[in-house]
Amino acid sequence: MFENLSDRLTQSLRNISGRGRLTEDNIKDTLREVRMALLEADVALPVVKTFIAQVKERALGVEVNKNLNPGQVFVKIVRTELEQAMGEANVPLSLATQPPAVILMAGLQGAGKTTSVGKLARHLKEKQKKKVLVVSADVYRPAAIAQLQRLAEEVDVEFFPSSTDQKPVAIAEAAIAYARKKFIDVVLVDTAGRLAIDQEMMAEIQALHAAIQPIETLFVVDAMTGQDAANTAQAFNEALPLTGVILTKVDGDARGGAALSIRHITGKPIKFLGVGEKNDALEAFHPDRIASRILGMGDVLSLIEEVEAKVDQEKAAKVAQKVMKSGKFSLEDFRDQLAQMRDMGGMMGLMNKLPGMGQMAGQLQGQMDDKATLRMEAIISSMTRQEREHPDIIKGSRKRRIASGSGVQVQDVNRLLKQFTQMQKMMKKMKGGGMAKMMRQMGGKLPPGMFPGR
Image 1 (tube, rainbow, N blue to C red):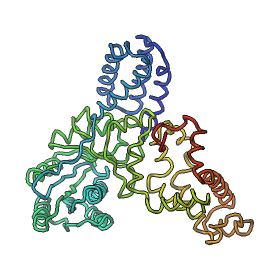
Image 2: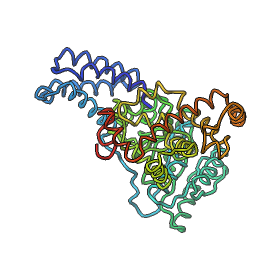
Image 3: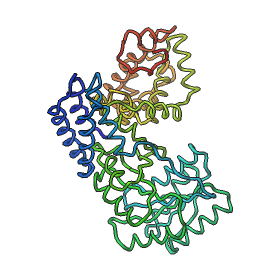
Image 4: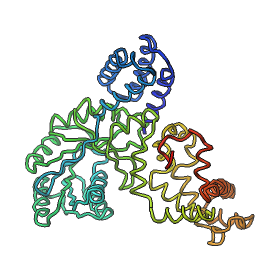
């Protein structure tokens, strides 16, 4: 996510951050590079112009001149302006109304609207403890109704049936009436998408909006369409009173132009990011955290939230206790850690959220991505319990059997055993508090606050 923009901006700002004194010339040179980075990221031109003008005004003002480290202050100004462009703070869903709170989902075909309904339903159920009902008012695609029913079953929320011979308004009104009787908190209404904006589609969704009066009208848009995403959002915003945006397929967008353009062009906040295909791959949008990620400063807060939500704390505590006491770490433990890491977006996802690690993630692409993690899990699963507890017994014939059972080459088995041995050595250092000593030896290589007592 945002790799291209992040690489270009961090490179541009690295040159100026070490400067003891800023001049109009070096600010001008850096801003020229920043401008090119934003345009290459497909950020809309009006947004780029405003952004550059505001950074320049603040950088040439008193704010930098009186500071002891003007180069670093310049980077801080860029970060602040990135936050301003994207909306300053997270804007949560507004559900303060007489239940059920109705949320209408709008967008073009293929933007990931129906999938986002499923993800949002899960988010509301798990994070906000809401009773959720989903309904499809897409009467043009029977597959859309079936898809939403399947998603509702996956995330364990209620589905209100509909069919293609009904009118969208009648479907939505019946679903809301049912939700009132069943004391349901939130109704998510999926609507028909089109391949392009057309008047018929807009008239239909306007009539639906007028009939059900939703408390939230969310526009779902594909991040990979760049500044076109912002322009489409603007067209919908003129037809409907949008309250926010869900930006999908962000994990496939290396540029980031849509995230920087939408708020400026529409005036509407991005409320969520779709960051993967799984039904839990929905993140609340925090402009300050995204600005940090773009500038290679990491996003430790989001990482902590993910760890708290997705890591089996009891299991992790048992492994830690075992390692601290005996220094033993088995392949079984290693497999559990790989599975938990995959649940949190894999090694790439984790590294992108750690300060200064974004570029390293790019170098490891293909070595520690989801495919590689699944391959490693398959290799360990092909071993016997004895082999997982005592990997030193895994020699020639055993390696060939494990490789055959997991559909890989013997070299892959060797590579995994080598990586495991390295991790085992590191874990042994944790025995009897050795981890704290190891951290001290590493000096200041990890950011403050990453480990207790630092």
